[in-house]
Amino acid sequence: MMEKDYTNDQGVVVQMVTFLCDEERISSDRQFFYEMLPYVSPKIVSVDKDDRGIAVACRACDEGEVRAQIEILYGMVEGGGLKGREVPVKTLEDYSGVPVANEESIFEQLLARGDVREMAHGSYAYSGLFLKALQYFDAKIEDYGRATFPSICEHDFPVLHPISRYEQGGYFENFPHYMMFQTSLKNDIQVLDRFAREGVGDGSVFEQTRTPENVLRHAACVPVYEMLEGATVPSDAPLEFLVSGTCFRNEGANVFELARINEFHMKEYVFVGSPEQCSERMVKAKLLWDFWRETFSANTKLDTANDSFFASNYKKLKFFQVLGDSKREFKWKIPAHSSYISCGSMNFHRTHFSKPFSIRNEARDYCYTSCFAFGVERLAFALLSQKGLDVDAWDDPTRAELARYVEL
Image (cartoon, rainbow, N blue to C red; front, side):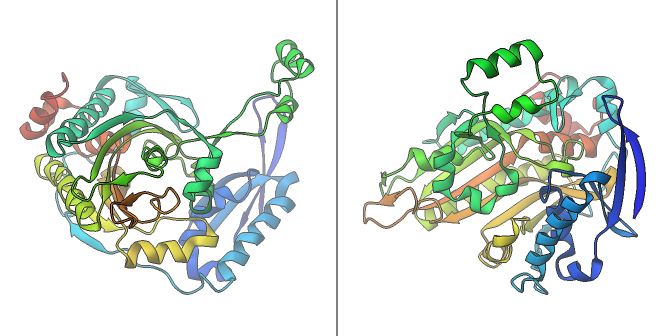
C-alpha cells in the first residue's frame, strides 16, 4: 500500500492511499472485476491496471469503506455463478490487417486546436474538423436510413425519461452502473433562500434535493418500445424507426478521450416485426458499415459482444448475447493506443421489450424487436484517428465522401 498527499481545489491537503486488489480472488473474471470497480464506491478516486496488478486509489479516511465495498464485488465474483466461466468474444469479420495512414494520437491535437473542449468530466463541445466529421456521420446515417427503409419514421426524443418506464423496460436490472438521474432542490422556501444566498457552499445543500422522478436516457431507442405499448403491428408492415438524441452514461473512472464519455450523440435504426423481418432489415443496415469500411479503407473488426453488465446478471446476459447472437459490435482501431473501440452495434432483442410493453402482431404473438446503433462521436474519433487531422493528406475516396455532406 502506498500513501500520497495532494492539494484539492480548496487548497486543503488530502492524504491518499493506493492499494492492490487480491489477484487470486479475481483470477476467473479479472477483466470484469476491473471494469466494475469504478462503480463499486463513489469514494474510489481512480482505478489503474499495470504489471503490479489492479490498483485502487482513494482518500485515506475512506479506505475502510472502499475496501468493504470492494469485498462485496469479490463475493459476487467468487459466488459460483461467474467463477471460471469466461465467455469468449468471437471475431466474425477481421480487417485488422488493413494499414492506417496515421499512427499518432489526435486527442491532444484536437484539444490544442480547439476542435474539442472539455466542458465537464466526460462531456465535450465540438468545433472545426471534428464537428464536420460528426456532422458527416449524422447526415450519412439519416440519408442511408431514408433511402434504404422508405417507411422509416423519424424521431428526436428528449433526454429525460420517467423512472417508472425504465423499470418497466428492465434497464435498471441490466445497466445500473450507467444510470444518471435528474433532480432539483425541494420546494422549500428556506432551502431555496439559503441556496440563493450561499450558493453551493460546502455541498450540504444537495442533501435537500427531491427524490428523482426522471432518468437521463442511456440509449436512443429507449422511448420507442413504450411508445408502442399495447400496439398491434400488421404482419405485412413491420415498423421502422430512425431515432436520434443525446444520451448519458456514467462511465466513472473509465472515461477516456472520446472513446468513453458520459454525454454523447447516438442514432439508431429500430425495427419491430417478425424475427425474419427484423433480421432482413438488420442485414440491410449493416451494408452501411461495409460501405464505410470499404470507402475509408478502415481497419475494423466485427465481433460478438460480451458487455460488462452488472455482476448479478453477468453470466446470464453474457451467455445470452454470445450464444444467442444477440449483439455484434463494429469496432474501429485507434492506432495510437493499439486498441479497438466499438463504434456501433447490432442488437437483437427478441421479445425482451415487446413483452413488458405488450407489442404484438395480428395473431397476438409478441413481436420481435431489434436496433442498429451508431455512436456518432466514436465514429468521428475513429475515422480521424486513422486518417489524421491534415485533410490534404487524406486519400481521395475519404475526402470525396465527406465532401458530399460537409464543407471541408
